[in-house]
Length: 103
Image (tube, rainbow, N blue to C red; front, side, top):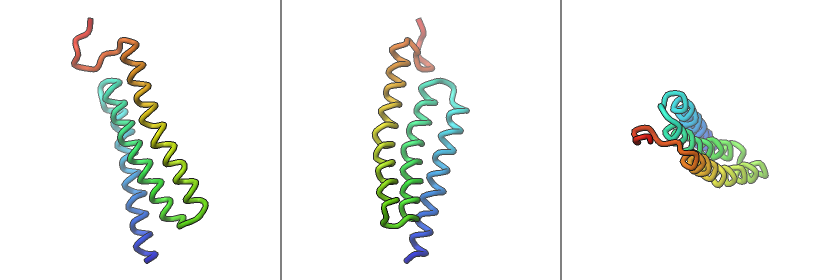
């Protein structure tokens, strides 16, 4: 059973690391603010959850797992909220997405 948990936790850790890496790559490659914001927010939310789930499996049912779960909940709330606030501020500041006619 411990081998199965180790394999599952490493799959989550590697998968989460890959998602975070692709989000960072999207930040470098995408052309405008809104597409970069999308790349960062989507991959960051899922990537962080996968990494924290892998760490929770490694830690077992301990106080450390509870702390990791609290971090995951905070990230689940603050990540999308911050992304929404940034997008709203950019639109309020008259920054238009790529492909939209500019006045």
